[in-house]
Every structure is written in C-alpha cells, then in structure tokens.
Length: 208
Image (cartoon, rainbow, N blue to C red; front, side, top):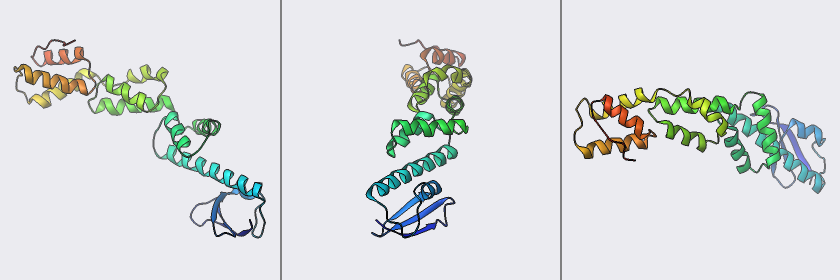
C-alpha cells in the first residue's frame, strides 16, 4: 500500500491526512508521522499499515476522550464506558483516564458533589441523589461525603408542599396520599414527608 499524499490538516492542529493508493484517507497524528517515518511515496507493508491504523485509532480515541472530559463534568466510570464503546480495551481505558485525572479533567469526588448539589437544588430527596450517583458510576466510598453537602431536605419539602397545596389545608386522605406518593417519587423518605406535612398543619401516618 503506497502513500500517495501526506499533508497537515487545515482544521485540526497536529493532525495529518494520509491518502493511500486505494483512495482512502487516514487521519494520523504527529506521533504516527514520526514513529512510522511517513512520507509521500512510501510503500507500507501489511504489518506497517495495520500498526499505523491501530495507532491512529488509539490516538483518535484519546483526542475524543480529552474533548469529552474537557467539555462537561463526568465520572471516570462514564468515560471508561465511552472508551469501551469506541473500541478501547481495559488497559487503554485505564491509561487515558489516569492521564486525564492527572490533568484534573476527571475528579470523581468533585463530580459527586456537583451531582448532589444539582439534584438537591431541584428539590429531589436523598434516594434520588443516591440513584443518580449510582447511575453515573461514582464510587460508593465518595457518596456519603457528597451527600453531606446536599441542601436541607426540610426546606425543599416545605417549598414543594406549599407550591402544590397553594396554601389550602389538605384534609382529603386521597389527596394526602397522592401528594405523599409524589414526594416519595422525588426521592424523599416517608419520615421526612410526614414531618413536612406536620409543619404544614397536616397529620399523615407513615404507611410502612
């Protein structure tokens, strides 16, 4: 396989476009250009062509991981899943994620606090917060410290009840149950719901 043309990309600094004799285009980095001694007119052996392709794919995954982690907060586990979807093995996943942690772009403890603050500020209870930490792959040993920084559930519950009831006392048991179930779906414990209803002037027994 002969390299017909090798030129730097006009769009991405550090990337080179390699056109092969079959018309295909291979995007490679500066490391590949140097490591494989690439130049227009060079004939690649099948082994060199395969090695170059694998190296270019690996380099592309690193770039995608870097851009993804730099663009939005995420857990190490979430990025590992992305890398696996892109074809990276466990060793490559560990290497890429480890490097991004060194750069400060991956930080599970900081991410856990961000998740907790986000959902607690939207009026969700602890069960919902735990569900989100689990879904996002945050290590369990980081949960409790992050949950300790959640907003006071009493304030959120009081605001939610006041909004739903609009200042009208609740006396109908069916309406009480409907409200309690709605709050439970938001992740609040029955004990917290009962106390909040008591502060609102309504008595509701824990169904459990």
